[in-house]
Length: 373
Image (cartoon, rainbow, N blue to C red; front, side):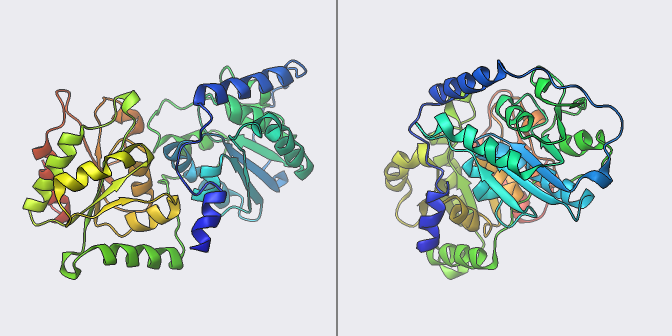
């Protein structure tokens, strides 16, 4: 489809970039370190933010991971509520440009991660940002993000804000980080410190009616008509971080769900694509196996699942942001930091390891709208 080709050109694919992460990080660090030699520490501003003077706002979250981009979306809704008439732009990596489509922002700037474009991309971006004459630029990571703070610092905005810490030399407003560390709860508290009106806002992604219809059509085509609604199971996760459940457990889970007469669609990410033939041989032809390279098409399909099961990963956060009830499998005890709240997800964690039976029990309870123990 034409739209999907355009998506891929703009970062619509979630395929990994060939430039190794460590090299990318080294190049960015060298560029920013070199420029930093010519920059003194910003003079700190004190007092309340003069909201009546804020007409142009730049929000920044420079992180290439799907989950981090999604977790930054509440900042857009909070700023739009507090500055309804302001121009609000966002700068981030291509995954943000893609995911934030239809959100209440005026313009997005994408920072390339490609080589050798990365060598001059930041200079071109900063030239463009400075020409916009922003009144306020904010690093919305609520953490120590070198790239985000760098972009905020060099944006030329009158007020440049971000979290207090080792990277705040580029800010003239350093915001104390709240005691709250959960990524789903911290942003409203963070911006409240800036004198903004806030309330709990969960991450949110918005699909167009056309995207929703296309996702429904794809899901319907995969299932026998009376086997809808379905449960989506994403078999990916960051193995290097110990967040990935074993293939054997996923196979047992899928078969156990089918034994409960629950219809399942199995989703694969780029790292798991080579496992599709193995899953196909193990599960048989009647279980749909999906690898979708267009991230928004993937999201449109997930949005039509009754329930989504995934390890701690970008697709887990994506499912929550789409309003799909989610079972989040945490293999490490970091769910107080990264885990979605019970209003939108059911977290499963056991120090000795997650048992398939526990996930099946939770899934049956969620589908029947019965609280699981």
